[in-house]
Length: 223
Image (cartoon, rainbow, N blue to C red; front, side, top):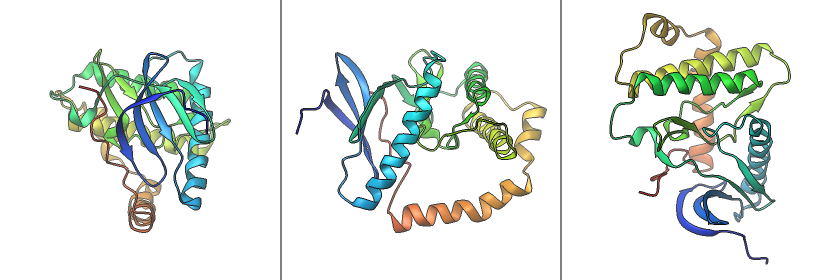
């Protein structure tokens, strides 16, 4: 077996699909997603999710936006991406300001302009408070690219805007505006169907059958 071109600093996350490490690669801190898991079926899923994330990272790379991770290297066994130095949003020691969420909304809209929906914005773990105080967005495994602005794309785009506003309500030091409250309180029938039926099914399959948890980041930063 060839020696891998990185040295592990610490483990950030372990689940049945992969292990995520903070590591050192060519003198820089990076994030490693290691797909070398034992069971065959989870490994097939893990590689599918990884290929999807690689495809999305390649699409957003040309944006040259430091608030998104940059793909460095990808193989069948692991992926190396850049490290956004900071802390998960729910571990922030102080309430965030309105400027943080203005930038967060700008990042999400930047993705939408490219036909990309992240599809996992409701998880605080995927939002990083970077060392410069700006938001960073990670984990694009479930993201989807739309070549056309279909009904589904528009639906998912609106859901993501709601997630940003919902996060702002929870973590920001300023109250929501009337227009933001209106968006937050408006839920279409499709969204209600997803909450009542699709999400419980997803939780049952991932957490009961596969014993998978998507909320077990210990500490993203190295402090």
